[in-house]
Length: 291
Image 1: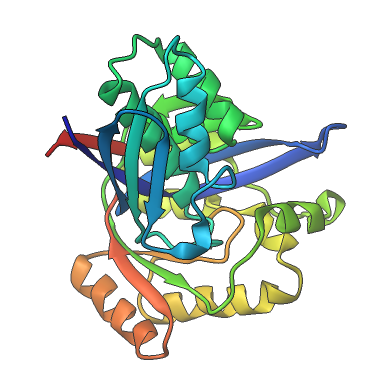
Image 2: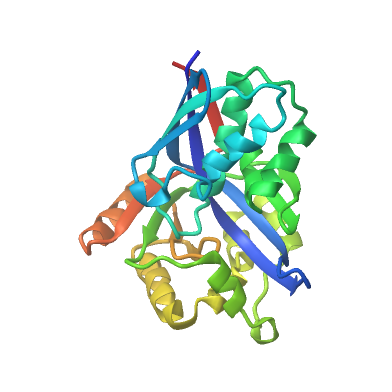
């Protein structure tokens, strides 16, 4: 049996950082949403060992790669150590705040569980996922969810009305750790109202939800804050109804009333030499199919 997994990116509709724990991790509250932009992963059985290749050689093929670490974590749950050949076809840009690595890891957990015929509970998978990264538990299911703690508490929410998206990444990337470490919580003045945001989205009132979509991590982007703000402004000038940085950046997304408008905005940014893509909202984080 061979499997293909679509590992979908995520955007952050809102992020609040509550405080930093003594261990360095941050307590957060986030509203996450899966989108149609996806990496594609290919899995095939192998007698032993993990063989990992990637269309982007910057990701490496060893234990620095989350997909490889996910495979090892599953192997450790088995009395024997089955092998797999894995190839990752990247479409989600790195250092963009779109969760590409986390989604790839979630896809690897779900696909290898099936490939190796493992009897693992959802709780087992979530435990492994959290050991790999804060966004990986969300990516196992995806859709629309409220995520709290340090990423381990995921509460699924009803999907909201699908709008077209335009995603833009500047020429630079941002380090998640760097952004969090640069964030001065005492200086954060604008925070999201999650209760109002969830109520508006659940009622299909996007225009009422937009004012509550706030990403406090924009305050931690340091010298790049002005560039992020300029991209958001450019999206609004292109017709976006709301623009926001995703995660720890550096990608910015805008909601548009239709795909034609989003596509025109993407063309405008591509003409400037920037990475840009259209997308829609997705009800799932990973989709697996046989090939």
